[in-house]
Length: 368
Image (cartoon, rainbow, N blue to C red; front, top):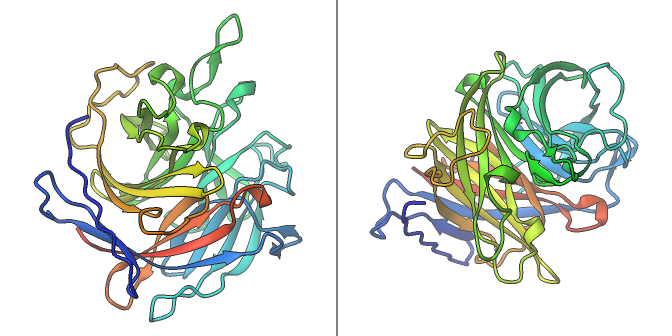
């Protein structure tokens, strides 16, 4: 990766915690400024539609309908695999109101039946351009050879389209049963976005594909793979390497990775990386990242070791700002705030009471 200076300014005060990205010389160049404004937590016993609300791992906002989509990463073991529509007010002074869940959408397999337990691990969700459906991901279960997928459904949850993934993402094993390629177990397609008016799917693996390099550790970054796919055509448009940061001191390596991606327009994206610190809680960092200057690895069975990865710069660090983010996994642009800045809404997964709490964060993004 090219050398890049990263600076984080953290200010704690009545305006909230903030982070500013800077250029190599330390000067702010078209910098984005991110401020944390508020957070709201739901109890683990919160219920809607007859089931506990938990495992929220993807979130997307539709401005005209003032409606959010959220997806649970329940594998069909805590009730049906499902998504929700909901509303969530933001007050003029930048506070989150209590979310109001409007509908529960049961996700259906290709044959129209509910997903059987452990045949899906939903992670990311985005509205289709007509808002009559959505695209969602499953990260699969690599340890049993189950591949991840990207699918489209109507608002009734019924399957309408498969967006095929490149072969490189499919878990494969050798004669001894050792995995030799594809997404790692529980480190698959956590993040996904629609761009180009919704015609292109952008998805990123949480850590490197097995054949592309090691998982994240304290010694090394992990070379995740980002892919751009034609939503209708299924064309493999482009693939790049995204560098997941090294695991921080005390963090659990197996829980570190990129959990969401969000478009800034053109070749620019926001990424959300999160990790776990035993006893202390979770970590969460927001980066700005670019495909410009990165070497394409499109169609490669294994990415060349010398392929130039995407560049990135840190925008906001929850822990440095004194905030335990919980297990942050979903991220979407929300409505414009009273000061004209863009709101950024992040949701944390409570793992159905096993780790973390269902928390919504409200942030402000300005500049850039």
